[in-house]
Amino acid sequence: MKKQNAVRGAVASPYLVWTLLFIVAPLLFVLWFAFTDASGAFSLESIKGLSTYGRTFVMSIGFSLIATVVCFLIGYPLAYCMSKASARSRSLLLVLLMLPMWTSLLVRTYALMALLDNGGIISNALSGIGLLKDQHLNFIGTEGAVILGMIYDFLPYMVLPIYTSMTKLDVRYIEAANDLGCNGLQTMFRVILPLTRPGIVSGLTMVFVPSISTFYISQKLGGGSFDLIGDTIERQFQNAVTYNTGAAISLVMMVLILISIGIMNRFTDSQEVVVR
Image 1: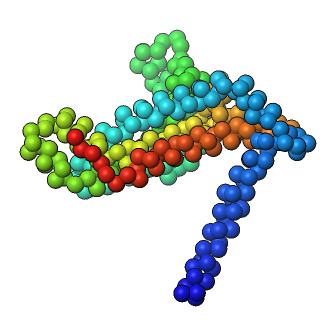
Image 2 (image 1 turned 120 degrees about the vertical axis):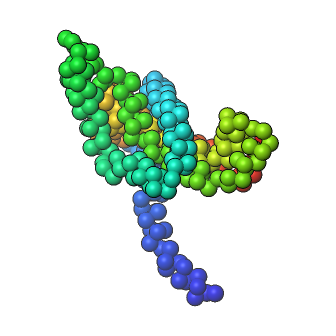
Image 3 (image 1 turned 135 degrees about the horizontal axis):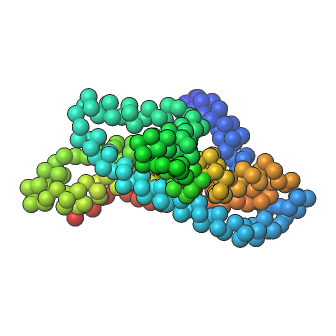
């Protein structure tokens, strides 16, 4: 037994060192800077100064919620159709869904800019067919462009967990619902939706968390017109003399992420699913 414990400890030690260096230590540094001033003395000034960024927090949460809801409205039917497709079609659809994820977020965002930019591919195409005469498509630099970028980049994170839940769904529940007189709509809302709840919650969390912390999408597609939480943190750490304000904002970001993870665990840990 002692030998087994020693072997387990030796195997786990690299992961423990990695966790301490790259997870625990950075979190401690964030806490330190958030509750100190430039001289290193304990201070709550950085926390109190967060009130000036209220609009930034509200805008970031609002954009993230809209992107998450739209991803769900698009992703759930897509995942359902994929789960009902043949094995060959299902594999093809999975490849097509994950293909953009094989490229960098930077490349995908620039590609979206090339499509939506004023005078870009879509604008020139619309002008060529006469839908836009003497003006260009003014979309870059708007709220819609930022939200569209979030949806485009994070939609696979919504589809994949829901698709996984649907492929594991026992078809006997659906057959029982049909035998009991449920139509297609009733089966969807009373059987399929409750049974795929873990995948739904995972997808919502996996889209909301990166959406609220993104900064590159808002910078490029927003044209510098919007400051989200990620943009503010980046600017604070790049241009500020001290890291205190940036650390305080990062602390709030961590709290929001922990709340999201807690909600996900609350709805996915339960093994009992009620089917009405």
